[in-house]
Amino acid sequence: MARTSARDRMKNEINAGSMADIAFLLLIFFLVTTTIVEDKGITVKLPPWSEEDPETQRLKERNVYAVLVNAGNELLVRGQPMRVSDLRDNAKEFIANPNGRSDYAEKPTMAIISLKNDRGTEYRTYLAVYNELKGAYNELWDELAQRKFGVPYSDDLPLAQRKAIKDEIPMVLSEAEPTNFAEGGS
Amino acid sequence: MSKFSKKRGKSDPAISTASLPDIIFMLLFFFMVVTVLRDAELKVKVVTPYATELTKLEEKSLVNYLYIGRPTQKFQDVYGTKPRLQLGDKFATIAEIPLFLEKHKVKIPEAKRPKITSSLRVDGEVTMGVVQDVKTELRKAGQLKVNYSAKTDPNAN
Image (cartoon, rainbow over all chains, first blue to last red; front, side, top):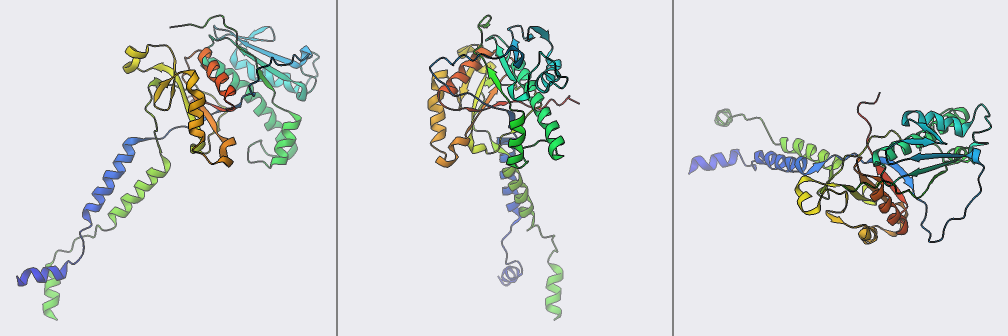
């Protein structure tokens, strides 16, 4: 009796050793139930829906960069077959038109990219094409920002500077209703 | 004097493990902060394609996810192998998109509603037909901010 009371006086603290186990249990639970998701992607602004048919605009042919993707995932750019890997440089040249070619865009502000795909086009190809076109604009913005402000283009730039760049090279990408040649039902 | 020192000498000098829980809790909090709870079980196979011009989705609470892909092996007997849409944790039809968007919208304060983004997590092998239908429905519902989910190619450069 006397011995226990002496021991009690010695260790008068709560045993916190199991606390670590409890915390470990929680830790493992969270490790198992969670996944680190890569939440990245290509952000797109869709045009608003309207029931009426859009007005037909007469555009000069030299200002339109028509990209067609067929159900066989092949590209037709302004009537010429092309590979996806060549699209970015070609689109850049079309928009900026550094050599003043008469069949390329008059000014970057007037350039319009028209993208049309088939319902049978693979999503992967569509996204690759979209990625290249967006990449062309991104590179042009980068070059312009480098020239004007000495820094690469990014969303961290002041709004006024970003607006100045977007005014000079606006991104106009029009998507037509897809054709339906080969919607593969499998 | 000697009585006290003797007793102390006899009791085993254990290393204090009292700070161990704190360390573990620190780890726990780290994992809780950096990870996101998977809200829905994936019933369709989604392997997002590779892309380079990526933007990061900022606020998770402002994002709703639409999955498009072929049903996984488990669900193929019932739902077939045709690409399907998954909203939340169940298969859905295109017509259910407006309700799904509305359900997500009411949970968000009004000031932040214009910033709502729809993340389209689409399998690379899906054809554009079903994606186009979803896009049209999103446009009709007034949900114009869309993010095509993609990842960076680990083999690039």
